[in-house]
View 1 (cartoon, helix red, strand yellow):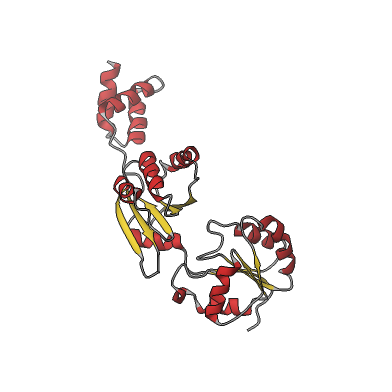
View 2 (cartoon, rainbow, N blue to C red):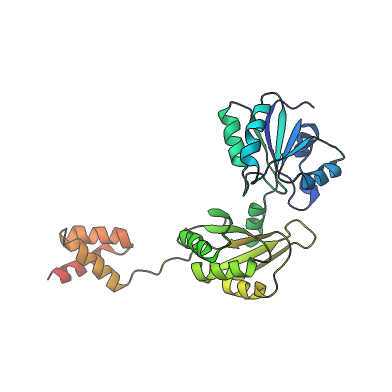
Length: 275
């Protein structure tokens, strides 16, 4: 098999080597060059495949310097982009390489496969119809709190990556910023000691405060619960504001739509307030 020149985005196993697709294996066997997050990690995968291929490091610290040379090679060579585990571009600088390759008119091909964020979502037993991937939260407490506050109102399941030593502090920060939502800590996904532990954030924070686990970790947090129904005081306040601008019937209609309340009852109350 000869690969046409271009960039191949290749997902690799997050633990179990059996998850490497036959297509991904073929691309890695035949690529002219492999751009790897850590060539030592990728060398072990290639050893498993029984092949040796030219490799070059491509990671956060050298991406800006290396990227132009890689883009220049894409017109004549097949370059495979891999991360240490999972799908490239997820929490790594690969998207800039894809952007520049496309801008230069080169072929870009995705070879999909494992992704720790999606795998953890399937294990968590939390809503999957809408989710937001947040990657790693900032290490400093202030920046971490601000990042959490920024997504507290998002009506979606939240997904975070984390390391063992930081897990307890991160769970405590999430509980403080989001409330005691349901959550799951998934680790060692697809490996021998795969584990998914579920519970309220405060309970999970206490569990891992003094016993940080080993392995790659994903935290999945439930979306916020439904807001409590508006109170009579809320309805009255909204009606008084609307009555300053509108007649009673239109004010009742506006508030009914905004608060999800019965229009006829609101109209009767509006008349009382005007009276």
